[in-house]
Length: 238
Length: 221
Image (cartoon, rainbow over all chains, first blue to last red; front, top):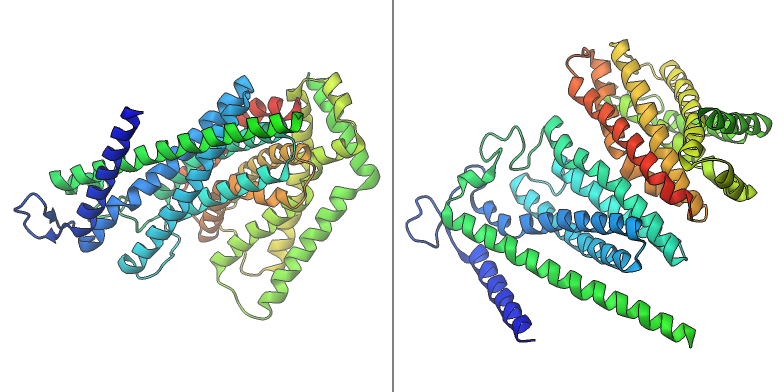
């Protein structure tokens, strides 16, 4: 009880600090103070999105991995709790996927001049959205619990093996606008080297804070789902 | 094992030849899809790169209409339990895959011939690259659509769900094929587009392996 209060307070403070620091800290040409960020050529003020957009995109991928992992586990052990875990992870993944898409599109309006331009990264996040959408459509079409769990687990693994094509292969063979693309002269291929120490610190703090938030939401989600299933089974038995 | 798979393929082929359900609907669908495109173009000249993309649009939607029935027919006739008794899942999958492969190749050859006859802009400059692309993506298309058809059949044969489920799985294949087809029309050599061909080959291999591994779980319930 005590411990959970402590880490929830810690998470709250961390998220507050990251939000304030990410939005308010100025970007200057020659950083002198600890709270000043350097200019990244080609990104300038737009660079601040990195503190919020990258964690959501990162969590989309993490949630997708976890959903697949628990699908895999379900197929091995046939334990319906694993299906609940996989389902909750995918739900959160969908939310973060939408967030990443929307923040990315808004950013693209200012950086590239249009909301959507079929950059490889945009194509891949669109494909992820489609996969999540298809997965939920498949789940909602099946009544039987075991059958739904098995078939959606199979589909999730099937979708998972196509993801490397989107994330790693597509951006390499298509030319892209996204920072970090193979042919980006200014801020690619790895953005991190252009950031100074405090920018990196806040970036990784933000990544950690969002990840903790995700795992917390995921735990609450799958536990409540398992309890709900148990109650509905008890009440149906009478 | 192989003789059983071949027997299953023979059974599908015979029942197909008797009713001609899949072939008829496929042929009609190809004609409908191509004529819709022709009507919407009218007398305008469209850019060459667009015809390559439209070619794959026709292929995708024809595949979606014709390949969904591989396992649905077994569920409808109630023969899937018998099949479960007489053969291992991988054998069943091999048989169905063979049938779908034949169907995909037949369908796509017809589409390619019709398409190059009807569209003046659709000119293939490097023929061998196109042949390679064609064969590789047909294999990928057949494998992915067979495994999705198996999922659909067990999910209560929901026809509308089939394109929804297939599209994200087929998207890497389609994107790469569109890229390669436009390469063919420009006249790129095979060596210059080996990255894309590598992507296609790895897609086929990965999908084939994963499908064989996962089919057991779909088939046994």
